[in-house]
Length: 85
Image (cartoon, rainbow, N blue to C red; front, side, top):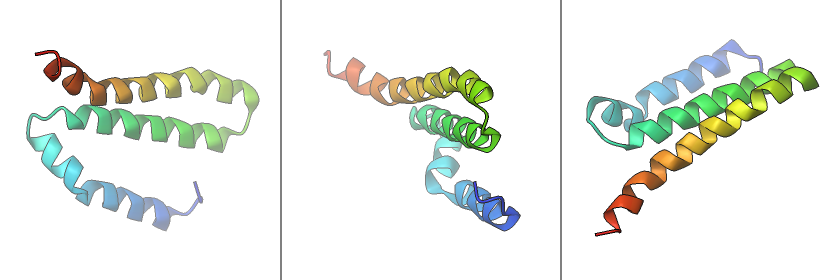
């Protein structure tokens, strides 16, 4: 968002070294689903922020909403199933 390659590289390195991505991507855990959807939503939001045109921004808005909806659904899926028993 700043336009700096150094900031983008550091942000990418922080994401790669983050424990949630490292552990959840190697172990079959439901957390990786909502983390990936959140990362996709952030990527779409960032790209729509860079476009700065209303027509392209409106085209990406439903996709951002879908990614955030999938993020929320992935997070709330397990507690909804386990509380029914």
